[in-house]
Amino acid sequence: MKTIEEINEKIRRGEVCVVTATEMKEITSQLNPEEVVKEVDVVTTGTFGAMCSTGAFVNFGHSDPPIKFKKVWLNDVEAYAGLAAVDAFIGATKPSETRELYGGAHVIEELVAGKEVELRAIGFGTDCYPRKEIETSVSLEDVNQAEMVNPRNAYQRYRAATNSSDKLLRTYMGTLLPNFGNVTFAGTGEISPLNNDPEFRTIGIGTRIFLCGAKGYVIGEGTQHSPPFGTLMVKGSLREMKPEFLKACYFPGYAPSIYLGIGIPIPVLDEEIARALAVRDHEIKTTIIDFGVARRQRPVVREVSYAELKSGKVEINGEEVRVSPLSSYYMAEKVMRELKKMIERGEFLLSTPVERIKRTEVFKPMKQKEIKIVKDVMVKAVTIEEDSSIETAAKLMIEKNVNHLPVIDRENVLRGIVTSWDIAKAVMKKTSKVADIMTREVVTVYPEDPIAIAVSKLEKFDISALPVIDARRKVLGIVTSEALSKLLGR
Amino acid sequence: MLLLLRFDAKTVREPIISLTAIKTGALINILKADVGARKGELIVEVPEDKAKEVLEVLKKMGVDIQEITKSIARNDNCVHCGACVSICPTEVFYLNGENKVELRAEKCIHCGACVKVCPTMALYFPI
Image (cartoon, rainbow over all chains, first blue to last red; front, side):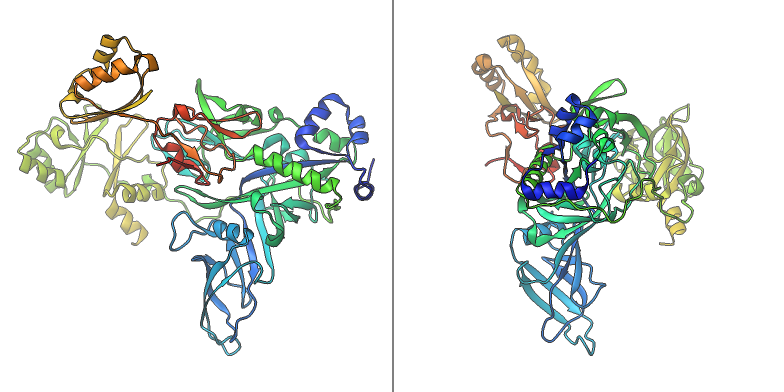
């Protein structure tokens, strides 16, 4: 049994034994927990990954005459100004209004690198804050506080991603190739802070941490905290941060984000803590989920361990699929080694948490008004067979007052679609069969899809109706943009 | 040697790769193919010792040939995350013993998939 104060005393005397989590795995494979407690005082854990829930509070000081921000932009990225006069929160994923591939993350990166950013603001023009607009440029030297405060960082583990659909998906989990073309995952597994303290015994409110090179603090459980998918809320000063441990990024088709290096020292106080520090990748389980289904409950493809994910290949449906990590183990190692050095040099003392973080918490879904699904809005489709004549198609459209005819075979299986526009084309081309003019690549929906999916498909492909089919591609009905507009009151 | 072959409306109708393989005995590996009714584009890998022969035969049959020499490169924005690893069709990228992303540039076929995928925009084609 050791105390944090005893360890700090050793740090001050330069006698502390610090190892990185990677080194610790070697040690725990050779020594029993009792011996580990005797030998090792502190283990540095680390992660380096894209953490979207990141941002910074900045106080810019008062202008003359003073202004109360109504809206404020830094390098054309809007910051949240619903605070006191010249306080603002710049969020990492907010895109620039003028520059592509640039966002709040890049603003934070430039500030930490010592660069100036353009500040543009409009004010309310009140009696106490009469000024209505201001433009200037500021660096970290010019502002007052510049504190990174991140609602959710350092995910303990995360669901890996794949894509069963036939389209390439650009997501916050990176680019997912069609037909289970690849798997991506985040988190550093056995060296990640929370996997080494799953009971939150030493990582709690007030724990001093390494945040991008700065001495930061855990200030609470992170949003969506739900062990074993635990998260942390953290803070640290931008001024103390080192550019090396913070990197703005951009996930195509999603948003800007930011790579952060977070290191947390774990004091080896007793055998229970030593045992937890022996955790290995094969024991850390997560699931691979399918982003091909655009629902909250994305289907689980399979369970998987971090050891399998880190091997670079996993098996899905009997086939080998290549895996991309999204977190950098190389940088996580650097974080752990840097923190180890800081402790050994006596620059970083450990702190006792003032309160423990909850070990059980449920991550609730959003309370929503009833979700409407395609089945609720679809109507019976007027269909036609592919060997029918153009005249038959034209007659059907006029008689039934429709613009779209799904084309089916004798089994009612969807083969194509013809629209009134296709009929016009047929007249011009002087063709006679429906099969000659129909569109064969039909965009479709399933009856259980939420209508938001139908709307986004109509918009994405710039079309006005979608045949509704079942798994065997049999036509069940049709949804039209008119029906959806009426429902949504647009 | 990596070659970018362009076929026009006439050459795209001929079984040129098969003919070239039979005539030269070269094992031609097709890495990327985009063939339509009026034109086509292939990226192929040809063994170095047969390259000269293959080039001659292809040229004779009227195929437009371009050798691919400059492959993918990286700047110091790279944080070694590995997002590119599973995207590259020819496995150019891999994590080394230190968990750093390394490039086997000689395998690159210029498809550009990784350039769009890299979150820190560290990958580019040198001009």
